[in-house]
Each structure stands twice: as structure tokens, then as C-alpha cells.
Length: 142
Image (tube, rainbow, N blue to C red; front, top):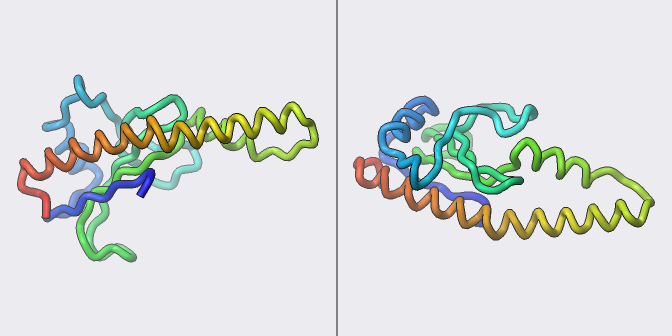
């Protein structure tokens, strides 16, 4: 699925345990540094956040078996808006009859979608493959 990767694990992680695991194993020189936070002020929970592009970042979070619709322990990686990307997306939802503003909105939306499905997706795939490798090497993969 575009914009989302799921890694099934043999153990359940809390966000703090996953962060600790990544701090111990993640190569920040090759795969960038990360932090725990909310992608935007409207976000409900914290995630491990990694950079992707100007408009998008990758959020990493664990889900334990037993949650609603979750039968397995897993780590999920998703592409989400950066704060500036969220503001840009919000600005494209403003209605206007101005033809220049309308042209800008269409261009911005198309550019954003191209970025999400292109470079941001590539970064997501790269992070997911690396995290799978780390979890497998640690014996945490199914």
C-alpha cells in the first residue's frame, strides 16, 4: 500500500521501547536521526518521526496484539504531513472563485501528490526495509 508499511513482530513494543531499540541499532549517518513527537498540533498521539521530504515525514509506531482490529504485534510506518505540509494542504481547501488562486491550488495539489507517491514513498520503503533488517537481526520478526 502506498504510504504505509507494516512489520509483524514477535514481541510487543511500547513507543518508548521501540525508540530505545532504534537508538541502539539505527544508523543515523545513513538513515537520518529521529525524534518522538506529534507530526502536527492536531495529532492525537506521539510517534517516532523521521524526515522524508519538505512536505512529508515518516511516522513509526508500534501496535500490540489485542488493539481494535489488531491480531498481531506490529510496527507501522506511514507517510504523513510535516507541519508546513499540513498548512499547505489546509490552504488548498479554501474555496475561492479567483482563477489564479484556483490554478495555484491545482498545481500545489498535483505537486504534493507527485511528491508523496514518489520521493516520500521511496524514503518510506528505504526506512521500512532497514527497520525490518534490524528487527530480523534482533530476532523480533515473525
